[in-house]
Amino acid sequence: MKIVLVEGDITEQRVDAIVNAANSSLMGGGGVDGAIHRRGGPEILEECRALRASRYGRGLPTGQAVATTAGRLPARWVIHTVGPVYSRSEDRSHLLASCYRESLVVADALGVGTVAFPAISTGIYRWPVEDAARIAITAVRRAAPAVVEEVRFVLFNTAAYAVFDSALRDIG
Ligand code: AR6
Image (cartoon, rainbow, N blue to C red; front, side):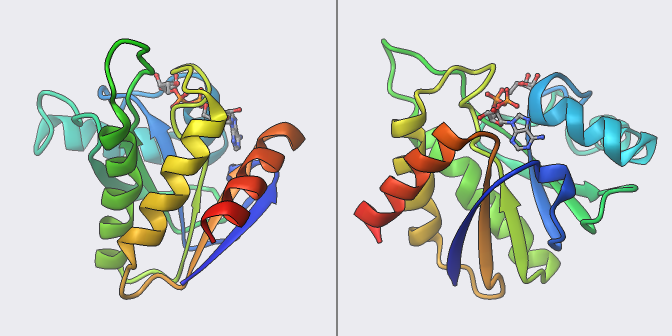
């Protein structure tokens, strides 16, 4: 499996699945989540509502992942995952790593070849990007999915791209 970095907007990626940095409610929000629902259209929210009415009555727990349609986006699927809010007093790294691992489990189950991730938790949830990049790349490397052939990290600005690039060189 190869890891590719691009600077850009995840909603424009031509991949099989894009990952959404959602919240437990699955009812949308700001950041990547807002962009995905805005550009993907109402079908995504409809499926999220159905998930809340069935499997996830109490919401999607932090660190877990679930797929819906991608609506009008170029991708076929959106895999929603809930990153942890950054805390200086408590180490929540295992939950951030779990988002990447569980999203790849879902992607593998869908049988998809290409998956794009945003830098989960590094926006509204305030995770420092250097640390988040190291956790993300390590988790993806360790996951070694059976079906997924390409993991693409889509970084929203040049600074985040540079940080991920450096982490990828360090970790390999
Ligand atoms: N494409 C790629 N990356 C993006 C895009 C985009 N279109 N838009 C923002 N980013 P965030 P979080 C980057 O805040 O920190 C929502 O309200 C952004 O620069 O989207 O996990 C949810 O509903 C940052 O580096 O997600 C939750 O309540 C990264 O994506 C909460 O925010 C993640 O930023 C989740 O917070």
